[in-house]
Image 1 (cartoon, rainbow, N blue to C red):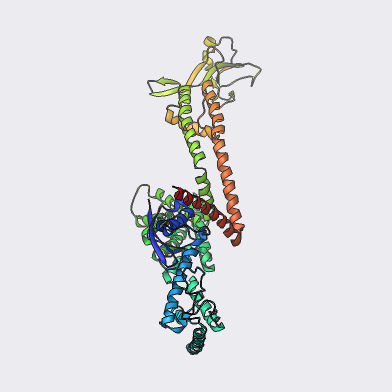
Image 2: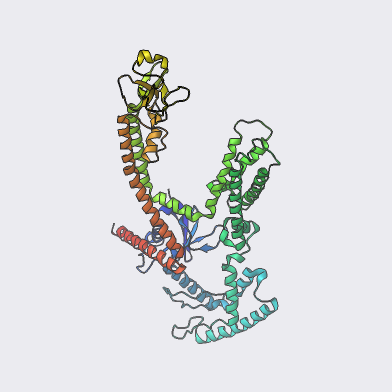
Amino acid sequence: MSTPIFLASGNRMKRMLWVGSGGGWADLALAHKKAFYLDENRDVPPSLELTHRSFMLRDPDYGVAYEGFQLHLVKEGSVVEVRDCVLEGEAEAAAADARAVQAELAVGPEEYFFVDAKPAKGRRKKAPSEFSESDVSDVSGSDNVSSEDDEDGAKKEARKATKLDLKKARAEGFVGGGSAETQHEPPAFSDEEQKKALAWAKKVLDYRRRAFTLKQRTWQFLDDPASSPAATGFTFFMLLVIVFSTFTFCVETLPQYYVHDTNFGDKFFVMEAVCIAIFTVEFIARVAATPDLNNYFWDRMNQVDVVAIAPFYLELALANVSVPGLSVFRVVRLVRVFRLFKVSRGSLTIFVDTMTRSAKPLYMLVFFTSIATIILSSLVYYAERGEWNATLGMWMRLRVWYCPVVVGAGVGPAVKDPLTYTLDSGIQEPCVWIDPTTYPTNYPAVMYPSEAVFTCPFQYDKANDCVKTYEQSPFDSIPTSFWWCLVTMTTVGYGDVVPTSGFGQFIGGIVMIFGIVVIALPITVIGSNFATIYKTHAANETMDDAERLDKEEDAGEDDESDVDDDLADDREL
């Protein structure tokens, strides 16, 4: 979708449609050349080079154009000023022609006639910026660089010098129709005029002295920790409050400190109330000072602020009302931990850039993991579901075999008493005594009490007289098997659910190997992207301003060469 914006260069301005920030600086340069050259059937000068430093965005609040802006700040109706040397030269040449005509006709104040440009058509050389004392007085206001008496005296002296210079210039042919050979350079500015010009420029360009309102200073203090030492200290204080509040939230859940009902006198409630009060004051100050209230609550970090403090007031309002599950709602207050991202935006930026660059490997990871989970969970379900028990209405799988074990007279005590003697099976299920009264019938060769017979559990069918035992199968459906498959595929292996049959264990081995191959490969790519982005981020932090500007200019020149190629292709077409 195209966005209507305004491009200004020299003394001209045009409205045009811009495709947006997706194309980068190259598209903005192409739009300028198309608006001011191609649409007017003019050739683009070969020497015209437009980089990112050639563009300045006019601030909608203060009316000041600044460079170094991000393209996403260019919105509908924005004014972008372009430093085009050709158009600026044309504008200054036209201004020089106009001043020359005014000087010849003696229209306007005398000091207005001094221009460092010839009234010749087509001149492209820039004239130096001129300075007017009235501008100083208008901008500086109450902060004038000199007292009123000194300023009046300086004005009188400057006017006398101006009249003498004007007479000399007219006599020598500088003003009013003299030839190019007889014209001389205008007189240099005096030291007093240069000081006043410098004071005027500082007053205009220094944004810290541009009479920021209380609302603007408050927002800068709250939102920009680097704006002042006080803002940095406040941000550090809020960080400590967040950490302290999270610590108390965790400690109060210990059994020795836990209080089920709200107790206004409890020390943990008092500490939480103090922290919430600080968060509330900061939130109200942010809402009152924000420059864009309509879009303030669309920011996710600002939504975190609301969610962090709302449960406390809700719990306070419903303290004497019995609402089931209200205490569980308190866990929502932990979202305040996400506010730490505000003071660690560099780490968050690295993480987001890594995930963005690794979108395709992540897609492959999710896709293959999902497909493998469905297929392998289906296989293990059919291998481990066991037999259907119509009475209980569930799947039952084989657990262990209980087989008889005869303990001879040489093992254990001489007299084996069922109340005192036990036999360890070696697994979780114990061995069970067989009633000695059944020995004469079932085990006539056993000499009780010196010998005894137990039934012990085995993982295999040891003898023909072993008895099978069953348990409810944990793999009673394919969706239930997803948990085991994911845990095994990610090589976590909790061990809460395991296959017991030979075929089920074989499938488990396949899941392990598949998890190593499918998951490890995309994770390697993500790790490589993270290392690259982190290295670039660290290099940018250590890079000085000059190196950073050179790097950005190189990138801008590459974009400019692409734009020139596109323009050449358009001309051929």
